[in-house]
Length: 258
Length: 164
Image (cartoon, each protein chain N blue to C red):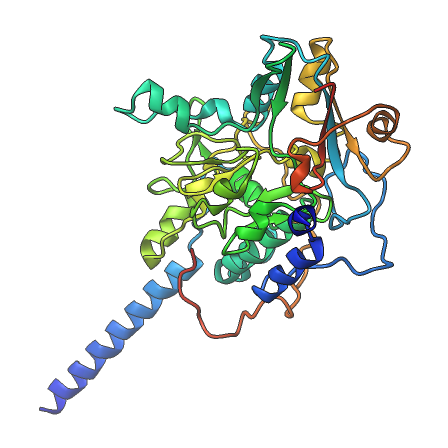
């Protein structure tokens, strides 16, 4: 009985979203605009024919390695953030924007330790999108969960709603930033699956590339809906898990050997 | 008495003429900053009078398309605006486009319209283009800039206030 009442009802979620006036843009059924991405800037709107995702093999993720975090910082200009004057080092460490966290998980019974990078999981049913009062938090047709900084009012409900602690808030004016990744005071942000690379037709994300360069190859990026993609083949061949499976968010980022 | 009237009217005609000349000069002036790539081009991605009146609408419309549908191959891109209109110091260092006397600032200061674009967007091309000067961000579009769709824009519509 208890189990029934706790079961996640996606229809109920959808109903509540509609009742709350959330206007969900649906892709016209039957229209397939997707073409194979070359190394060209995108000229057609993204469609739901693809869903970007990642597989992280924690058995290959090395303890002490932070190549993915460093690469993410450089790709997305996070390394350009500067500590505001007079801010304590400790507070800055807590407040600066971080898109990937390296997490160590220890099984108390067996003592087995897993290392894993944790970032926005790009859920199919993202709680951050459910709670956003302005529609700034949204899921793109290709499954990438993003924040539209033009409409973000910085209320940070999404940060509370996210079960993965994946989002960061920009507290102070940002002096230096990259042209490809705008960033400013008063907005929330998180991993975009390197959306600038997606739209420029590049094949992978900065973190996956860095992990491969280090020789670990723990991160595989790709299209979940393409059954022939290396990602889909790996997902089909090995047991993988979603973090907080109980929430039934159907995450785009999957983990193995946790 | 008659002389005084004639002198007075002549003076007012003269003043009005001078004002008209000033206004015409201001309208004809280019605000494109020397040293920017834009200074070497005949006009922007659309004819200059159109751009002056509608650039904010173009950017507002484009930002939603780009953020929500990922379309980046467009001629109305704020990144390209910056790349083309930014000017450089003697040492080839880019000067922030919204800085005093720079491209955005000259008109916006005059019109007392605050821009919020650069709260988040970079004011210089970052990373810097490889040869120190931006390439042609318009591709071939400048040469065949055509009339823009009226369905999206309302050039003749009522003026709207500043938008964040």
